[in-house]
Image (cartoon, rainbow, N blue to C red):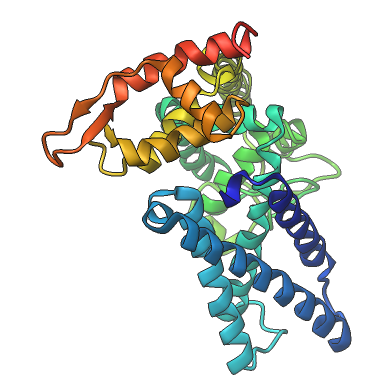
Length: 366
């Protein structure tokens, strides 16, 4: 099978790395000649990836559409070819950053670069981080909602207290300010990350001083009269101290603790028999061989299934070796009520393969 061939995978993985280097070589204000060369190299890589995807489609046939990885890569290739057609048929002004075609091209190139995950997932530590984040998301949903709620409440309160502050060293009414909800929200995100939060706090509490002239601007009427000339407020003390203690020191640390706990659980799961003895791979191969989820594989498909499992367990792929392998499994055969064909049941197969996997990995059976 294509995905199990070591040398084929090396070739395509090398192409992915080369393609990533090509994408990294694009830069602003590059010469037309440089753009043409990089585009040509990128098109060669895209052609190779298209050939790879078509080979998978030809070899896997209907199982291709049951593989999320294959469908994702096929979706990316579809977007890439749409991108190529757009660039070939439409002249896109490069100076207009808001041009929707430029945004689309940027998204497509970003998705194209995600194929590097195929290589990263072979690194055990990276795979553990990915799996832990993937599995922790449902658990963290309530925590994320709590974080958004607290930020929302403090952003609204910050607008009421500090929206008319006079621009200063840190609070500048450009990227750090409380003059609008979006600015207030992202200012608090910076404060939560402890990025110069004490300087924002100092500007918010600063009042009339010899080197700082300001006015009392408590309402929109006063703002129309004086503009952004507002003084700070003593309310900044409870506002920023409570936010820093509640959000930065408690909520965010609790969030990190939950992520680390799930990472530890995922690490233990990777060291458990379910992962160590390839049971996850066995279940995935069963899903591909039994796309309808009937819980049965007929004897013809099971021969192909057993060949893949033998590869997982590093058992020789000769016909005689596979026959001995199947005899050792001693799996009972049933007649499928739907197809009236002799089949193997998932429960029996997974139990026997679990035993076999443990024995093989402990060196009892060679």
